[in-house]
Length: 175
Ligand SMILES: Cc1cc2nc3c(=O)[nH]c(=O)nc-3n(C[C@H](O)[C@H](O)[C@H](O)COP(=O)(O)O)c2cc1C
Image (cartoon, rainbow, N blue to C red; front, side):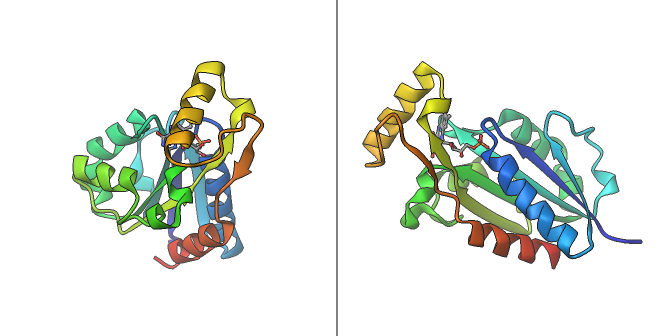
């Protein structure tokens, strides 16, 4: 039977979803079965899949709680298949914080969760002040100011490195 891959994501403003769509394309180009779900729509049955990819963005320092619960609940099954995890955040725009072993959110994630996916990656996300509600915009401007990033409220920058996403996708199709 053909290998079947599931991609499960949590995305608030769509950047993690955009990355997942790019990963899915890589599977489709290789004629591999792939299904994409938001964590909110996934029925929880992992047994249909030989590979599972989980992607989540960071908001105020943490990954989506639903993703964390999902991994904790399904740890035994996840350990029996090929898995990948990736995080999307703005700190990863900095080269020195752009790898799983140097990104603080990825490091923290694996300190608090007992799970060792086959592959881990981290991608820089998107900054789009105009999209954020007032409170969020002020907070992100503050975070950006603290981390020497752009604070002009008209800033819209996609920091995601799409070559890195494509390479990750290729790696996943070969797992
Ligand atoms: C309300 C809010 C809080 C955020 N908090 C953080 C943060 O603590 N650290 C960080 O690196 N990025 C933070 N970000 C940046 C997001 O991780 C980034 O915009 C990412 O592309 C969002 O992905 P998504 O659209 O899939 O949710 C935050 C963004 C928003 C809107």
